[in-house]
Image (cartoon, rainbow, N blue to C red; front, side):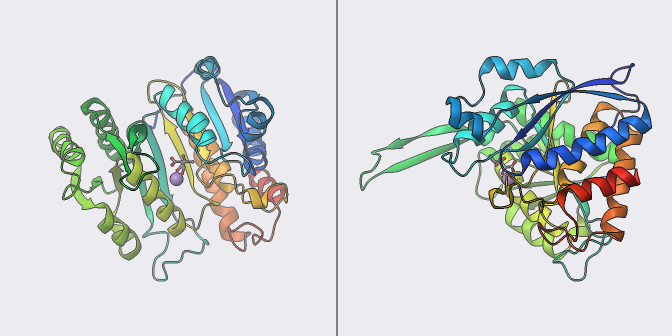
Length: 360
Ligand code: IPM
Ligand code: MN
């Protein structure tokens, strides 16, 4: 959320840095390069503490992250994360044990994911440009299908049943919707908030979302409300992305539509997100994952991590520095990079970091 003043007066911020798996550490290094240039220019200080949580540590020690270690993250002003996911670790262990654990335990109940096409960036939507693709997804980040509730009945038998529960609490839904309304108002663009759900099928979970959405809307008369089923949302995101200003949705749908969002904004190389606890410690990450096949090759695009760094500064209250970085990234995408895809940028990972840091 936009703050006009920085969070702490002396402008010194304690940042936990989790490079994580695969290309995570490489892109994080570039984000830190840009943040260092920005801090020098703008006079704030980042006090960095690296952590080695991730697949390699897990394979060596059998430990992902303990309650105590997560607790230790509370003393930081923010967390910068590279990526989570290791080819030698069974799917789910690191994702649940590290990424989701931090999101849940630190009550980062909002996942804020801007979908913005920068100038000069190729989009698969032939007739759309930067003026058409500029919206933000507010994804609920602590509930829904992600709570991991469920069971197997008759596991392995012919009559097996697997249940996976979507938990939606009024408290969780309401705080997410309130954040979304507030965010839409502050963003002050078209002041339109679209609820993306599936009220015609999920007649319990999304009935709650629908009712609370309409209740909270009464307090935000300046915000225009809209509703779209999730399948239709996917369609409109491709056909008429310019209709969207802010979309609010549950955890699972938010996960899915933001990958589609990343594609229309130019790919995983540019898509950044913030896991926000507006009252606590937030964590910023490129949303693309660990991309193991590109690891260590100096080909991965660090712009998403750099943009995550900018989102972090914005949340810390360093708004001028944040928008400078975003503007510089836009300049670099417009004038330098051939493509945003790994290996096709015309520059190496480190050079892209240098371009942004240098242009700052
Ligand atoms: C994301 C990722 C995660 C999610 C995975 C890695 C658990 O896809 O941040 O979007 O599903 O939230
Ligand atoms: Mn995802």
